[in-house]
Length: 160
Image: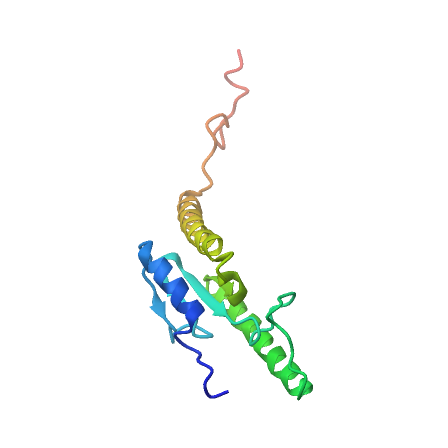
């Protein structure tokens, strides 16, 4: 297990190279955020986790198969990883960050391009949506609508 890398894995390098080629700039394993996300795009307020299917227990994936030996150990280890991932994403959500999880199986050659293109689309859409929401909330006030009468106006005086 000492040969298992946690940084600069092949799936992570694929995503990093693709995003960089599309003009996205990011930080690696940002220590100021819970869980030290693999990629952090501060401009988009988005954290990207690139998870291995086995180590993070990707349900329904053919790459997530428990070993035949020491089953209880592996079940508890993977369950702990899942719980930790959920807690970190909840913390990030409370801090106002978007979380995206890219699974190892989604980066296999058959579906890689589709996954990466959808990642770019999601980032762009999230950024545009956040900008609209912020500007709408800033401009929102208790002003009367154009068709409404001002408060305190007595409309019965001028009804002749």
